[in-house]
Image (cartoon, rainbow, N blue to C red; front, top):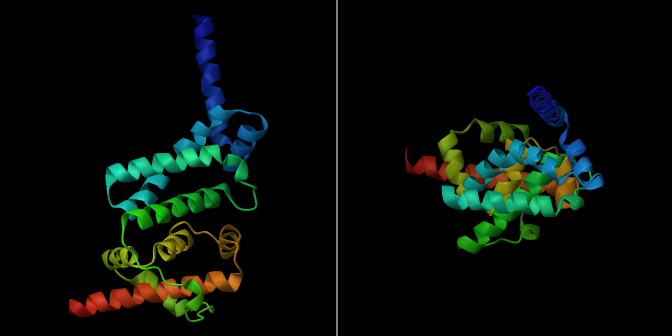
Length: 202
C-alpha cells in the first residue's frame, strides 16, 4: 500500500514538472529524447484554442472538431519542422490557419484576388487600427466571414493571437512592408464591409 501511494505521488510530481515546462522545452524533449508522451501536455494546452479557431472558419461544431483533430495530428507528425525561430504557439497557429484556409477553399465558393495587384497600403495607420478594434463584435464577425480567408487568418493572428510583425514575416516568408500592406488591406476591406452593413441597417 505504501509503495502504491509513493508511486502515485511520484506520478503526480512528474506531471507537475511537465506542466511547468515551456512549449519549446516540451518540443525539444519530444524530438531529442523521443518522449512522445509529452505531446499530451501540448495537446491539453492548445486543443481548445485550435478548436475555436477552426469553428470560426467552419461554423459547424462537428466539422470544427474534426478539423482540430486533423490539425493537431499534423502538428505532431510535422513537429520536426518547428525550428524555434518563433514561438511554438505562433507556428501552431500558422499551421492551424493554413489548414483552415484550405478547408474554406474546398467547402466554399470564393473568388480569390491577386494580392500582388492590390494598392500599396504598407504604412500602418493607428487611427484605422483603433477604428477597426472599436466596431461592434457582431459586425466584425460578419465582415471577417466575407473577406478573403487568408486575410481573415492574418487578422486573427495579429489581433487575436498577438503575433508580432516579425513573427508574421517569418511564418509568411515575406517582408515587413508586405505584411503591413496585407494587414492594412484586410483592415480596409473589413471596414468597408462594416460600413456597408451599418448603412443598410440605418
